[in-house]
Image 1 (cartoon, rainbow, N blue to C red):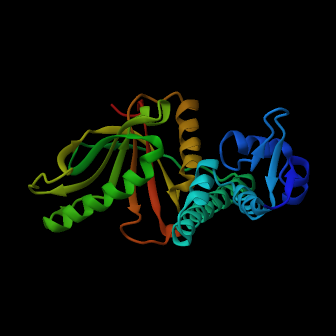
Image 2: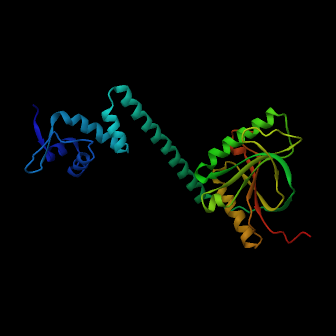
Length: 273
């Protein structure tokens, strides 16, 4: 039988605090080799040191306790490696997201104040093929990419002729309540067949204040902010879906620096009869 170690000795050896060791005991992650029934003192064995060291390193990598327990309980090395690799992939993805957020914040803080060019535009009703769905805001980008790919595939498969740029309509609820109706569409001429999610739709007419966003849509909120402030300050903003036209986007190029998007804000136009 190996040496019996007190919780203090085991803590010094493994660099796990007594508080942490008690918690790991409670959650059945690292249980003492024995507990004195009279005093409640916890004792550990030498054989538990390697396990404690593994657990500490996994927790240093922010692996949830439930996942650490799964790694510890895995019957073979291959299964353990799969669990650890999955967590490392998650950490790398989170690191990328954090890096992107930091970069976006730096760009925002260093962003020069550029003049806003706004056009007031009357948009007529337009026949189009479209995909419509109520979407959670957190899923919007994934839905948008998939819907556009499906829509363009349908246009190509049916030999339809586009009569204008691909566009999108986004109800205010998507921002106000984090869930709302979203529509992507391609204006076309001729008759189309409704297949899968693709439907025939008449995009409604609108009066819009329009400005152009250059580059990736990751910071499109800045252009939206400037355009919305313009509409509010001129007291012309009205209810209605926000509108986008993708003059050059993912369908044309993967180089986001070349993307050009028109953003339309619904307005009341007093300058027309």
